[in-house]
Length: 318
Image (cartoon, rainbow, N blue to C red):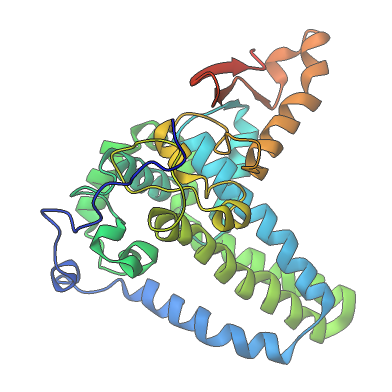
């Protein structure tokens, strides 16, 4: 395999709809209002309440909610690249939810559909239909609730049978409200009303903008700029900047080549924080297997892809 593999022709997909067609049914008003408010209010709040602790909270929650997406929503729930206990799945799902990218069934269904139709008609967010469409415009068209139900049943039937994920679907807004109130309360305890404002400004608002746009860069930037280890049928690329910012998700050509692999970084320089976190959890829980409690390990059966051998092996078996 070569790092200079030529990507497919980036011309628009044959059956692509025009932007007008995509918004023919209108827009999702709650999404539009939230995004306008988020991006409009955040600069003012960060200017009013700057603090080092606020920036620290931003970084901590960027890591936690970002890993909720990369480790939880993506590698565990969507692709089942490793096995985990139910309580681990639930924690990861809540962390992913707090990133602001939708409840887990919504995210998983769209992402599985993306892989099935990557850069083809039916792909929810192909850059062949416009860079900014792939980046974030795709979230704004009005969702037909009936079609959304069909999408869920087609692409995430395994999750529809799980009451916890259905509960997260119904209670999505309240988790964010709880985080916002919790950050304000914690900030108030640390430094009064000023620090409450700082924790909310940086830990909730700015952190959400950062995580959202980094995730969306995987759909846009990592399908346009970067190098390719593999000849895939889509335009996926390995982008080092996105690879670092998105905790390993930017090694996107690798991922499209072997979707079920737990490691997206496959060459020595392709640092993959998500894989490191998953592997660390598997290693530190190994003693449970040695004392006969192997079935209680939080993380196990990692599907690891070897670039030199071009194959997957299962590590940390149950």
